[in-house]
Image (cartoon, rainbow over all chains, first blue to last red; front, side):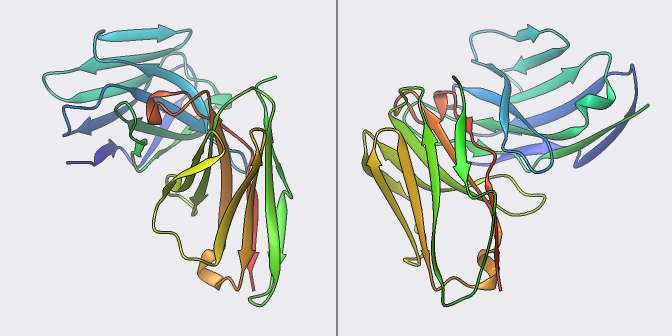
Length: 111
Length: 115
């Protein structure tokens, strides 16, 4: 029940396309859902996060869609660029508990 | 300044060595974390310090010893490591101990190789 399942494991998208990464969770007590972006040789950086009181959050080209009833959330990257090539991790947590991480998605944007 | 710094960037050590990893932040954060990350895996939590007190130890072997000298500094002392301990060691900080619901800022990591 503590798991966060992330898919796909890897994704190749053409430049200008939409990249979509999905995550699913079981624990309905989770109340915070961040996405982290990690470039090779760097630490993860928070990209965007959502709480379950909203169904969508957009920051520039990055959008989180959240479906509370389905216990799923996804990251959409619009107009994907080669600089977006990185590993993306979804995560979930609840107050006073630590992050539960998804397995990660390696995204490659082809020029 | 939203930076977490870590030194050294790379470390190669033998199984009998003693070494330390250092982490520093000047954002006034009161929670600091050590994570271990293996290739192609998510970060794995090791320790959490809250207000300079160890609040979480995720059953980490005693060959890893954390220390928080003050609210800005976090050390990880290493002794008698095994080759399987080779990994990227990440430090992170957050404002307080709201657990994962606080945004965590990560450092660039120390790439550790145990020979």
